[in-house]
Image (cartoon, rainbow, N blue to C red; front, side, top):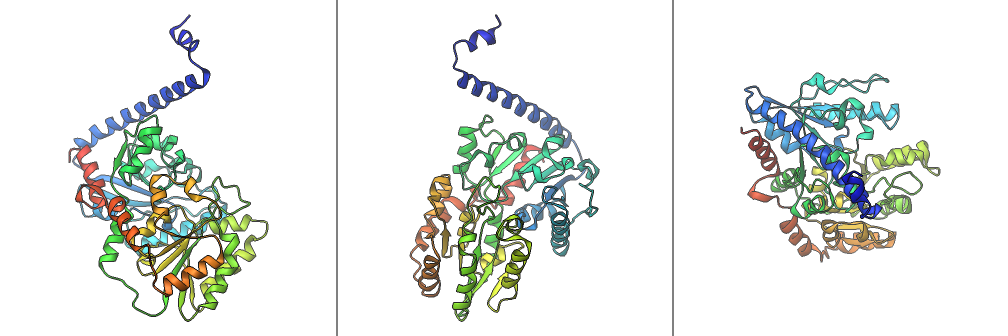
Amino acid sequence: MGITKFIKKFIPKGVWRIIHLNRVYLTDYAQYQHKYAEKVKELRVSNRPIRVIFQVQYSAMWKCESIYRKMEQDNLFDPMILVCPVVDKGMCHREETLKNTYAYFKERNYRVVPIPIEASAEGKELSYFKPDIVFYCDPYECALGKCYQLKNNTQYLSCYTGYGYNSVPNSFTFDTPFHRMLWKFFIECYENKKLPQKYSPTLGRNCVVSGYPLYDEFKTKMEQKCINEGKVKRIIWAPHHTIEGDDQFLKFSTFLMIADKMLELAGQYSEDIQIAFKPHPELKWALYKHSKWGKDRTDNYYAQWAKGSNTTLETGEYVNLFVQSDAMIHDCGSFLVEYLYVNKPVMFMTNYNRESQCNEVGKKALRCHYHGKSVEDIEAFIKNVVIGGEDTMKGVRSEFYNNILVPPNGKSVAENIVDCIKKELHK
């Protein structure tokens, strides 16, 4: 009898399965890290600029502005943007996002490579662009063509910074095959690094606490003092896409409950407020599939926000939108933390105990919010807090900012990330 079979006789099946999976995961992790070590050796002796590809699908999910610009100013790096087709949402969605995302980067003077618009194209092989390092902006590889997926490109050094600030305890945010394959997984804060250290077979060995990249942009914009000094208050409404009746694992959205009422409130308080409708990029497509909405109703609804006298439709980047706003109403996991960068009144909408769906950072962030479960709660928030100025949560938000959101080492997030890479490469 082999030693493995002998040991299995004395270990419960469930425990053995965990041991076996951990052994497999660690073997895979070691295999990938060995390949990365060989690439690092190559780059250490190379005298050419290091080509860094940032893969992006949606402009609204782009959070690496400060990292890209930092590399752009450093002769060691040769950064560029690669807009990737979204392959799991249908042809109309693919073509629209390709065009819009490409235009976003082109207009802002990024070095962005041409994109394939052809119906059958997944895109050119990643090897065509000769990268050394690839920054992934989205961990969900089902939406990427095979030629761009990390598992098919482990010959390049892979990096990931979350497209949203992680506020949930679920392992899909820190311990999927994608996360285990990464060369460097840049994490927002030490509290969040405890999750892979405790629950991932990798024990967080590829994790580096850098801060959340969007911090750099918020800090710069807030220092420019883009403050609304007018009488009319600017409110953002940001609903999540996980509506009832769709096939999403998470069910965060309260959109169906308050959609029509939000337009009514905008009209009712038209002399006092402006409301920016900032839907999650996936909400429109979720509504297209919903039995009681569909394309016509959805397009008409979005058009009402775009054309209203005191309403706007916002579908792109949101740093300026946040900085120039006076308050937010939302049910998004990412915005749970992100809006706290601007330290303004914020209401979280939910119809169940959301704290049970939060990690420790998420729970602390949730306690910095006003809470709403109905349109009446929203109206009271608008009247008393936003218009009336009775903001009792400001001190709690300031404490969270100083203790959680400020990046480590007395540096910007971009400095932490770029310095980490240069240190690894002995540059």
